[in-house]
Image 1 (cartoon, rainbow, N blue to C red):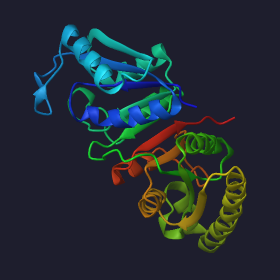
Image 2 (cartoon, one colour):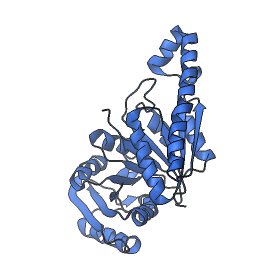
Image 3 (cartoon, rainbow, N blue to C red):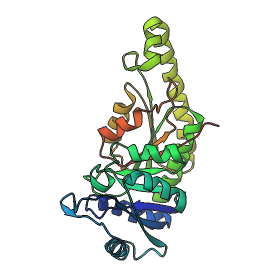
Image 4 (cartoon, helix red, strand yellow):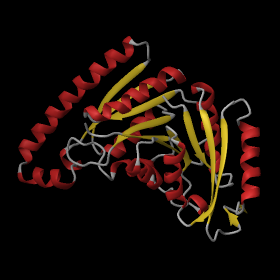
Amino acid sequence: MFKHILLPLDGSQLAESAIPFVVELCKKLDCKVTLLHVIEKDASPEIHGQHHLTNEDEACNYLGDIAEQYLSFCGQVEKHVHTEEVSQVSQSIVQHSGEFAPDLIVLCAHGVGGLRDIVAGSIAQQVIANGQVPVLLIHPETPFTGFHNLLVALDGEKDHDRALDVATELAQQLKSDLRLVRIVPTYSTLAGETAALGTMLPATTVAYLDVMEEEAVDYLQAHLDKLCGQGINTEAEVQRGDPAQEVVKSANRSNADMIILGTHGKSGLNAFWSGSVAPKILARTKIPVLLYPVRRN
């Protein structure tokens, strides 16, 4: 489980929106926290209408103030200012994730200024593509109300079940309820090569999707029985339709406080998370999204 959180901050109140989430995780999981600020090359004097941190001394003081104000209870807080000016802050964060070896990066997805590359999960995609560090994206308009309900989206692939393992551990340690959801496409929501194949073999494709739905019900029921046996309050549902839309609908219906996705960027009928699905979910919701990188065996 997560024991070392990397929290990049640019000095803005928007970026600080992620702090309450980190504080709660630190309390419940007994985490070490590393606060990071990257000096941006040719930085503007203001960011989001506020003073922009552009030198080492003020950045160090800022991170020290954040640590004292919010994380004084934590005995493991480190602060790092990257003083060599960089033009791509997102790339620097990726590099530091390799240097500091965190097992979770928490980011506010406001997409402007020093963290302007954090738009619809682009930084998360870079981190996942360059390593195996999970990324929790926080929307700046989402107030922290706790981690009471976690939703994990599954597609039946064994490698993605690792995301369920993580969700299970989080539910246990955060004392959260857990909701499992699996989306089976309808004929009209197929995309790419699968849609082309469906056009040539419509009846066969429809029948196959129906079989997928039956298999999905059995798949989730097996997980549901196991999780309930472990004492975790768990619900499960199978829906039909567009994956991104249906995941967000399910999260809204269940008042989810976090959506957990396993992603490796592969595409295909049985690969639920193609390169476009996770960003679509991020674009459709303000609920925090935990992107957990998985690898095929």
